[in-house]
Image 1 (cartoon, rainbow, N blue to C red):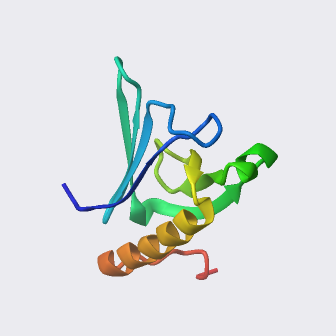
Image 2: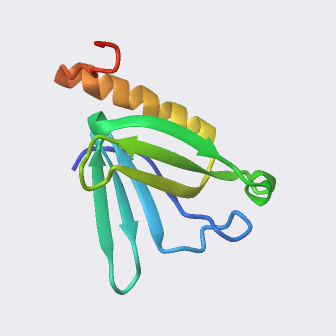
Image 3: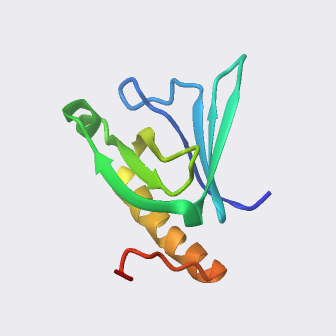
Length: 115
């Protein structure tokens, strides 16, 4: 497994990690583990991520957490949200930088500028 770059838990109540949802970012993918007794693990390769946006409601701002909505070119995970994490703007920037580096490393060019 690749080195873990960042990890956090969903923090739905007062910014506390009282959830069984974990987010793990490695050099090549984002892994989402959900559940305690019945577990689900989802993963998305970084080079497939296309757009990011941060959303913070009033209570999220008070407790310094937020959501990152991510669009992807993956057919199974077209759009998903990393919910209630600490420092969402910093994480979004880190993700964006890592996605660009991963695309360069793999020689992947997006076609949004090729029209």
